[in-house]
Amino acid sequence: MRRLIGWLIDWATLAANQGDKQGQANLAEIYLEGKLVKQDLIEAYKWGDLSAKNPSPDFIVFSGRSTRDAAILKMNADQIAEARKRVAAFIPHQPQKSELPEPAWVKKIKLNGISGTPAKRFATIGNQTFEKRERRTVKIDGQPVIIQCLEITDSSATVSIEGIEDTRTLSLN
Image (cartoon, rainbow, N blue to C red; front, side, top):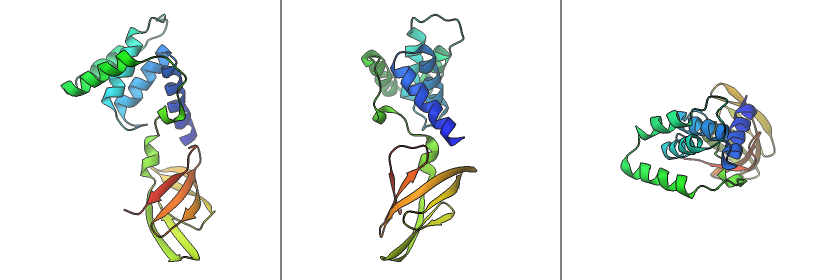
């Protein structure tokens, strides 16, 4: 399920950035709802407005206009000005990896503790205890996520998360 969500976010972002009307409408909804990624009203407005203005044929129903309108009702004047600036600056392109939004559930992966000696440390992530190089399944919002612990220091653990390209360093709070 996590891979499917990640794929959906990536697809919508890639399509939207290349000027695809349906991708823009989908990305607007994703940002407005804030369930799959962190809610961002400015991005919801931007993508909704771009979809509504896109000259592609409307042989299916696009929700860009209604998403834009729903976002604007929740925005202040500065946010609206920023959103309109982003719309004006938009140029269709192949997005870089840094432009792809991170799935919201990734932020819920937390380092809960570190124990052991410098020679043999353990990191507690979610409800699982990891040694260096160990791979386990952790439940995030009731869904399984496969994590591999790559490195453990006194105050952090570096992990790879299945379905996410870059490694993450989790720090103790």
